[in-house]
Length: 369
Image (cartoon, rainbow, N blue to C red; front, side):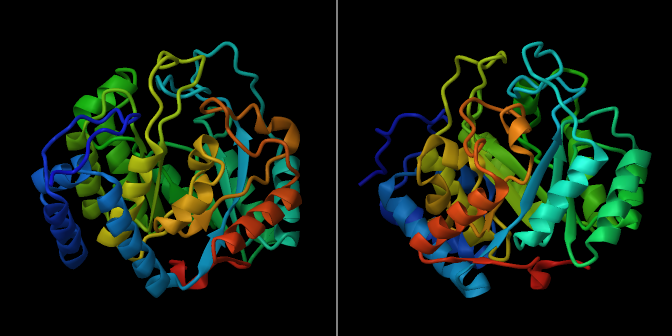
């Protein structure tokens, strides 16, 4: 019996018809060999169906439990600026979006978020923002040093886009531990459909390689179902991730934003996203895999379903409530109204309902320092 292709909502193209048994065999090989050639990876992705998703999910969850037990790691997200010099076609904070309500948190506001986060048990702060020219290397270095001084036992993660290697080295020397930079797509032809001409996929990949070489715990990731995406493109993502061997991979469904060129495009598939989460866990057992906000946005149990598919990280929002709706990368983003404590408590209960528990701490066995 060939895998059923009747499900709607995915923008990937059909690639090859596999029987359920053939798909299971490829999943088993992915586990043994930690990767597949591009054609076979594309065929496995293109064959996604309920039977293969269930098979991959069970295997991925067993692997995650073996690696991490029932622990789910929390990272306190601080979205400190929504200014961005880039004009990516999918992003709501793109520089040409005149309707975006721009903001920058002051250094004092960021430090206040960290203080509140530490009180709530967070031991990793993720400073995420657009590529804001105001935040020069000097300003970022000073911010890192002040956070490191005030919270010596906490990990500092940056997610502020593409910089030159010298900048990354300065941030590392100042005390940053981790860096998240989603590559969005590893296929050059697809990258050009998502970004203006002044942006380069090769530069983005080189940034990730530089971060790894410097010593950061490095995270990359991609959108699922972005306009023009095919299973071949997704297979290239898996090949790039295998080459880079990052410590963390964040993926989520593409969700259109009303003030972008992709406003009318179809949303990415939750089912395919969960399937790919499982395949990532199977291929690289020790990955830190977030159950992303985008998953929670398209389904009320999105985070729990991500955990059940093999994820083991959640990122509650520590940003001031008044700015959360302004960090609008896509339409309908969830959890913009709760105070940090309420959001953390809500997530804790959700994880417990799925049979897992939040770990209070930074997860030292995952750290590079």
